[in-house]
Length: 337
Ligand code: F1P
Image 1 (tube, rainbow, N blue to C red):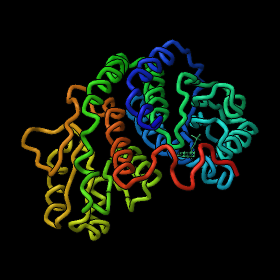
Image 2 (cartoon, protein in one colour):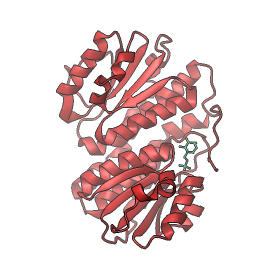
Image 3 (cartoon, rainbow, N blue to C red):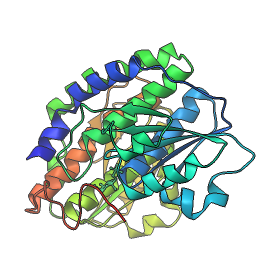
Image 4 (cartoon, rainbow, N blue to C red):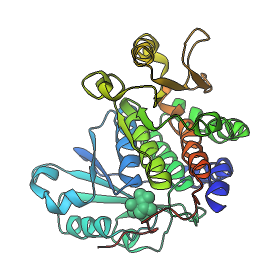
């Protein structure tokens, strides 16, 4: 089961990524907008990375699916603005990312940085600069440690860009904290073994919204389970109507919104749904299942710590349904047009 191995050994890979990215020097041009692009898992990574980047650097950052660059150029790139495009792809060969970079190469107002696990890929060759995580050599079709490592690399990149020692110091803690939390790798099994949960909803807001979307994709890819994701409070605005006794809501908490989070958990429980809370929360925070994450880091630098348990949730669910997580249905490692 290489998917399992790739999930549980990601702490040591994060340590290598920290060393790798920390020693790299980045050439920066003044840019009006930092645009993060990718496909599938790498697009959800782009969404969280852009929010993180904006919070840490104070520079405008957005995320788009890579295909939109060449299908909708007029609403993606403005001629009178300077862009720094950060393209993300595990393989570096996904067609839409390569096409987007070919298109961007012809634009005078765009510089590019690619983040990939294959430094010799077409994507890297088309970019001005590359963060190459060649120590990540995933065999699994679904992306697991490549997601956390490329996200972590982009967090270090953002913190280095503005020399934020506080963020870099906190980020240095992430590999050992990940190793600690993976000791409880069976934490989500109680949920996946409970056959009465038929519908999974993932809630995460701000920088966590991309993580919630990625958790949805992981479960869908490995198990084809019906699942959705929303920004936390958006859930009340319509989607909450689907909640019943077969619903489990996986709720990503953050330190600064516990009161609002708790009210929403109670609303879900009133409709007979159950809640798994993951994140930092006080002893009094009530939920049906709880995975408490280390509260010592700031919310933004805790980001990667949410991911292993969400990946393991999909992995355990696949096993409980009798599927092979190494061979997801209808998927290939690289999508080419
Ligand atoms: C992106 C991606 C994955 C998906 C599948 C096919 O790949 O779409 O998100 O899980 O395995 O590839 P990449 O551009 O990051 O290589």
